[in-house]
Length: 350
Image (cartoon, rainbow, N blue to C red):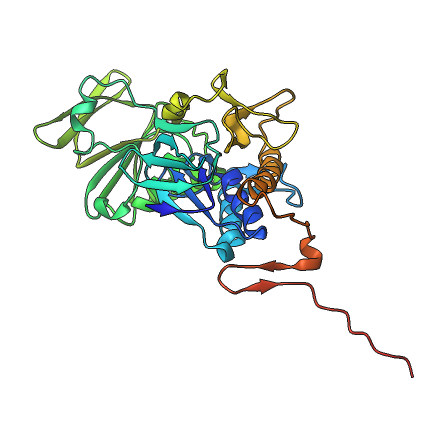
């Protein structure tokens, strides 16, 4: 059983920043996310796309924003349960909660903060007759361990950042990498497109456009795919097929937790602390809704801050927390680290 002060469901930017705000209050956090790494959409879908509305950053790449958040929360030593989806929640007699994942991992906390962005993400699957037959037998929708592709023949389908970035990465891991896209134009970062073109010219990536995968073949494991380009069809031997067509957001099991739902989002009391209709369960970031809601990362940061203040009062109802600015009190991590402004030197004038 994993025990913590605040259990955060969703490790996107809002969930990560909540760790920092909770840390200032000496509250420990643990995060659950169905994706294999922290960062949510910023890491999984558009790590190399720039974001322009983060305060003090005229421009920051989504992946860099996640890296900075991870560095910011490092002193507060958060725990992570990654690659698992929060499945059930049980309220205990003492008003605490036990959240169990789809893999049976149990978490116990007095406060649950749902920061699941647009919900749990499920891969968009291409419409191929027998694709489920080869799932985890040569067909993968998310790359969790690149080493399984070492010296293998890999075909990636897609035209976004994920398809481009993984094609580039796996070109130095797999024996063969083929990138198939239904258009000649890609919708990813320009430097990634140029890098793929360079690797193609070097013979390290085979690029087939405009084309699409129309069939999969094999016995116990995927053995080949059929690629259609115009009127021509060609069968290509392959060990792994990775369709990267993005992720579809869904509330998933959270929708069955007795929370008030409106238009696939969780209703909260925005006038105070973003608490749901179940005391002790909060919803912050894009997953929540209230009058005037704006689905912006910076708004999620604000919501996370107020949520942590309310969580502190719930956990310590008899304590009064006096907020101190970090410019005055600094930041003291659970790892013993401390950041603070230099103290002014007072010297008498002789």
